Amino acid sequence: NHESGGHMVVGADLEIEVDGTITTITPAILIGAEGRQMQPATMPHRASETSHNHPSIFMTNLNADQKQIELVIQGLDEETNAAWSEVLNQYQRRADLIPNLVATVKGYAAHEKDTLEGVTQARSQVAGIKLTPEALNNPDIFQKFQEAQQGLTSALSRLMVVVEKYPDLKANENFRDLQSQLEGTENRITVARKRYIERVAEYNKGVRFFPTNLTAKYLLGLEVKPNFTVADEKAIAT
Image (cartoon, rainbow, N blue to C red; front, side, top):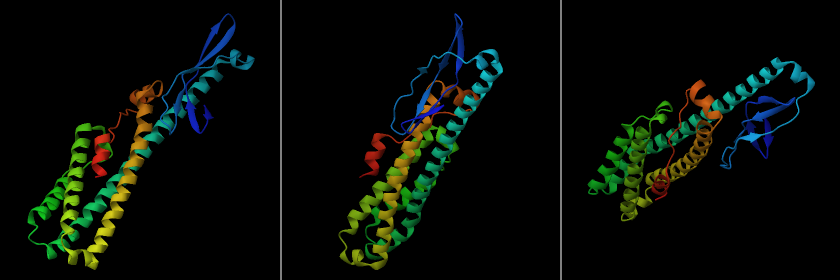
């Protein structure tokens, strides 16, 4: 294992003897934040007398490298789950603001019934989908959850357009406070989603590419996690 430009390279060495020369084959994997593809690397060298005469030392190195791969993948899995928990936390924060927001708007624009009901219904649809870190392995559930969140985002946008027609409502101190909290929460949602996208991209590389995919699938039982799509990002920004 070694560090290269801020990236970690891990792999399990295999030694082959050809004409008295020990060659070390290292299936290496680059794990970093810049999205480079993982590439196998071969690093031949003449083995030391101690390693040549004592195979047990070589096996110890193999076990150490395997353990390092496990730790790296498990660490990426934990980071991904933590990033997802923050996404859920910010979405819940937004949902918690909606009842007071709707009630405040209703006090000034009760006849905007369709718009207000649209926000309430969208919030109910979001609440009806529970997406735990474990459920992230199900792309269908993930997509339904994301569609529900996009629906709520759109409903809130329509509500803010309606608000523009009511100067007294915009001047209401309670409404201004709720609007400020909502805007801050939307910003935190964007940051949390971006962090999740980055974490899951790193995790998925470890699960998909050789040689760490063998450890991820057969030893740790991990699967690729779904991620937000370009369409999702456009929807959250509008």
